[in-house]
Each structure stands twice: as C-alpha cells, then as structure tokens.
Image (cartoon, rainbow over all chains, first blue to last red; front, side, top):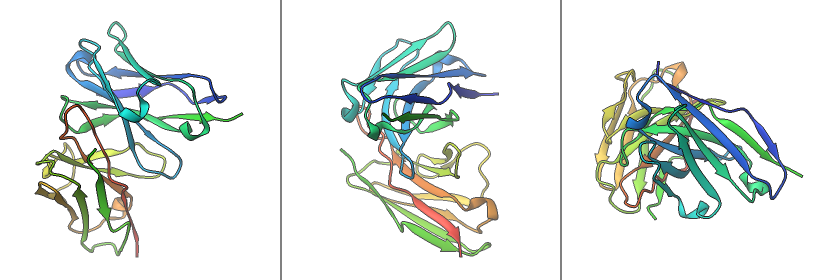
Amino acid sequence: QVQLVQSGAEVKKPGASVKVSCKASGYTFTSYYMHWVRQAPGQGLEWMGIINPSGGSTSYAQKFQGRVTMTRDTSTSTVYMELSSLRSEDTAVYYCARGLNVRSAFDIWGQGTMVTVSS
Amino acid sequence: EIVMTQSPATLSVSPGERATLSCRASQSVSSNLAWYQQKPGQAPRLLIYGASTRATGIPARFSGSGSGTEFTLTISSLQSEDFAVYYCQQYNNWPPEFTFGPGTKVDIK
C-alpha cells in the first residue's frame, strides 16, 4: 500500500540542525511531489516547502528561506528536510505529504516526526 | 500571501446532526481548495479536493462546495468518528504557496 514512513523523534539544542527523513513506498517515487508541513503543539498546520523528487527542484515558504533544505535520494525513495539554526519556536511535529502535482492537495501523509528544541 | 480564515473556531454538534463549516480566502483561489480532518495524535487526512471532490474512501456524508473566496464543508449526519479538527487549504498560487486555515474544532454537544 502507499505509505510514507518518517524517521523518529529528535531532541536538539538551540542553534543546532535537524534532518528528518521520509521514505516512500507503494508508488512511483518520481511521479509525485513531496511537501513538508509542520505543526507546533496545539497549533495549526504550516507549509514549509515542496520538492520535485524527479529533478530535485525545490520551492520554500518565505518564512523558512535560508534555513531549510529539502533533498531526495531516488535510489531509496526517500526525501529529507533539514532545518538549521533551530530555536525553541521550531518545536513541532514535522510531516511529509504527497501531492500529485505542484497545484494539488496532499493525499498521503507521513506519521509525523516530533522535533523538540530545548537547552 | 493568501490568508485563509475559518469559522466558527469551535462547533458543538450532537451525533446525527448536520455540521456546516466555513472557509474564506483573502483573494480568489478558484476551486483550488482542500479540506482535511485531523484527530488528536494523528496526521491530517484529505477529505475534499478541488473544492467539491471527495478523496478516495471518504464517506458521502462529507460534501464540499464553493469557489473563488467562499467555501463550505458540510457533514450531513455527524458520526462519533467525525469529531475532530477540520482545516481548509488553498493551493492556487504561483510560486507555490499552500496556506492553511486556522481550523474548526467539531466537538460533541
């Protein structure tokens, strides 16, 4: 079945970086875009950016420009999201989510990865 | 940036009743509007895309309508499993910008 499986929870200190992975299975990896969305505790959903697994092109939300990097490994059908210069406000659950094209809804979501930033 | 608003923030409904949730965009998003359901501790689930098309496996009691800036999600007869938070999302802009509304919590009256 189609699924996205994310890496486990992380605890980081302020100023550090975190890299979260999202492994896709059950479909052709390069035929769908992948998004990253985060959700702070008790808060709503915030879109971070998109990557095209086929060519690797990316587009990031302005808020995260310069701090986020999305990459992919087609040999393992995995996408990665790295967020640098972490601060306490980055404490959140990070989700990957699949989209059919650059203007489509997100039909499959990963289970989420909790990232805690604390000194 | 397109700003999405949702109303009400909380909707208290009895099982079997109808629930109507509203979503408004600060500028036209055509029909590029989706609705998601999220339960505590779970990832969001896609309910509706293209403003009115149910996603695979979504029961017929969920329906979406609207275009431009005004959208509605209707749950015709609430079941116990429908109590959750509902988010709308626009995906109309270029360069890509996928903004979510703040959510409507549907709880038991």
